[in-house]
Length: 171
Image (cartoon, rainbow, N blue to C red; front, side, top):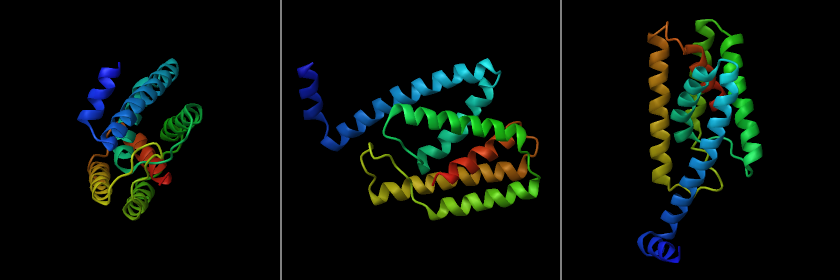
């Protein structure tokens, strides 16, 4: 074990080691949350929708960030509430097209004015990285907006809309 630690210290900078540690903790924590929630939502026959919600969320949250918590339990509780809210709103709050477009445009404007919100446990982003993440996030958001405007019968349209609104409200 000491040999591995020495090899890592010799091979990577302290910043890179922090990133590697952060990466493995994210995989462990987020993977366990995903599996637990997938089992829970599958019991209610919402497993597929939960997976789609996570895909939409990760494509945005990866670049924009959002709320972060210090403890696994509080993070899990928030993730459960967030996921439940997204799924519930997608079934219960179906707004007319003009209202959705107006709210979507507001979400885009909010995203434009905010820089990525990173975890305190993550090594800080450089200004160049911050700008790059923000541009990528905006590109994803604009792609969703174009899909939203052009494909009216997209099966997860309302779910995508509510995930974007909820994610943007965290910024």
